[in-house]
Image (cartoon, rainbow, N blue to C red):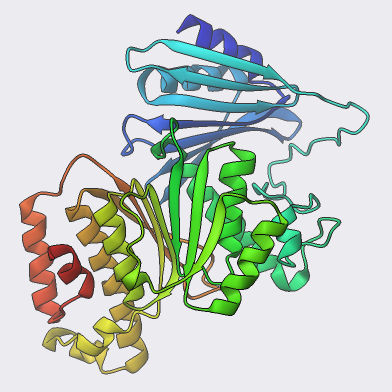
Length: 385
């Protein structure tokens, strides 16, 4: 690992833009780590942002201490590091046998056009898609002006798009690298996030992908296809159809379902499991089913209030969905998609295919919960069948 340490010593300086360590060996320790330089009271430090489940931890270290820590990560925890500096891009790969491979690519830098970097501790959040830099699909959808300025009425949407891309960034390593990645977006609607996903994976990451968006609204689908053709997004298409009846694929790598209404989310999840999708991203919407079923004497003092019952039913719906996916061999998380102040539909179910199944005792616990609530969720029937 000597060459890895030498490389880290060369790049952990003020020219570092960001380093992302991923492909973890143990997600209970950390799923990902990001590092960036910061300046506090005139001293150059390096801030580590460590992601563990739904938790995020920060630590500021000197360059020498950060090199020691990152070297340990490459020896014991992470198999990959993607590092962006002012003058070069660096990729570090660790094989299963511990062999270190380093690839470095020089950037073409125009010093006259390079803006001074802000290393302040409280600097503005750096989005994957940045304001002031026009992106073709954002301009086409009206989110940005041709100059790259985000329209005021679309700023929450702009933040949502970037948050969504961060979730995709987290699961990149789970998608195949040696063939076309097949992606289905169920209930794509106006497809802001579908276009964002395509742009990020195809244009920014250079992945070989084929994406299909499905929705019931013919006029919306027509508009999306027109924009995809105008932008020359050749491997992105949109179709009119019902999630429940969609049977045109035998294998899909990633299934997305954002705001598919009520039981439509269950049909999307069932199809993802049937295809053995490596990744599932679902933002459920309008969870009515359990609201009409839930009956529990012990919870009656809370359930007698309609709003409380509605919210509890929605949360139980998604908790049951997450557990059912775990029984099918998925590592599942429920994460905050966007701040509650911007949209109440703010929970995202992220499931990644795992080789391990859940213990039978947890299946029994789940059965006890459904009996306690006196509910019979659709997804449970779909997966049993």
